[in-house]
Length: 156
Image (tube, rainbow, N blue to C red; front, side, top):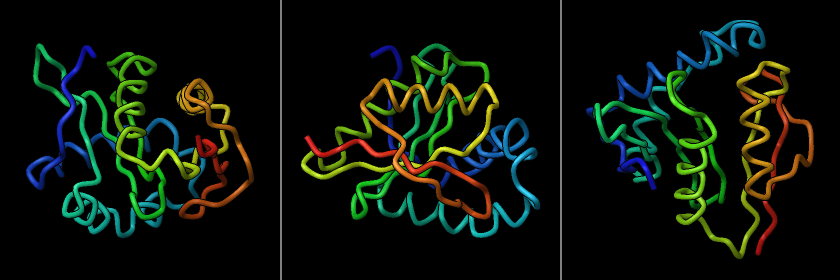
């Protein structure tokens, strides 16, 4: 592992929000009718994930910066947020975050995640990353008003 992965704290909420908005500036602006509606309740979501210890951050070992964040639900065996900062290698950092998260989830149950339906390079990379780690698209869905694909990694 090249990065350090640690639990996200309340002090990291601003960094998490900035990372989420970096994603929205490049992807969601083209997909969401109203970006404010998409982010309605996001702060409460962040607080809940932090309280439940279900969110991790990859840290740049040299600069101490956030390289990416992943949040998940143990109850639903589902990845609920996944983003890598633009300036970092998506596949490397994303793989480390994804593998770390999968180790926290129940491999005897299927694991789910949602990827937005888009041809945007960032979304294509995310879909390919999930596929590299054994996920397959299983059905169309809607996430906060945006068309998406439900991805599944079948139980081992």
